[in-house]
Image 1 (tube, rainbow, N blue to C red):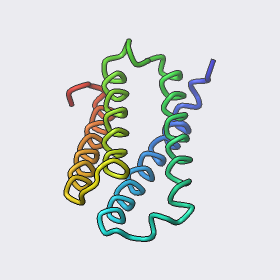
Image 2: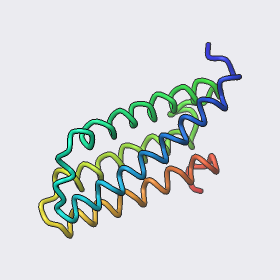
Image 3: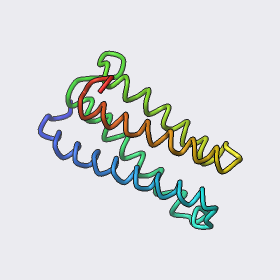
Image 4: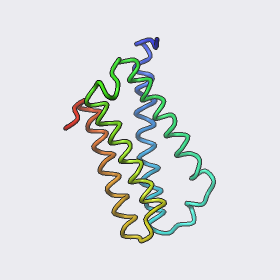
Length: 128
């Protein structure tokens, strides 16, 4: 059992990881759209994945602390579905799309889904 006293520390880690994840996503998107060689730097391929692992782990810890889980809590289910859509759109923007306009469209759509996920988290409602 995870102590409730961990809530604020874990939430702080989670919010910091969310902020960093979004900043990295936006930055990488700009680089992809500009065709920048910066996308080939080793840290660009590692840091976002490490941060997203921290983000996911802290999210799982928060769910355990508050005893609400996807599938039983509508807002967490909406966040999880949104996360899956966000990941797929990000993969489309960075890997699958071949044209710059398609990459840009997927990148912008992913940002919209990201903002939806944040709105769901803040309001704790599946339709914020």
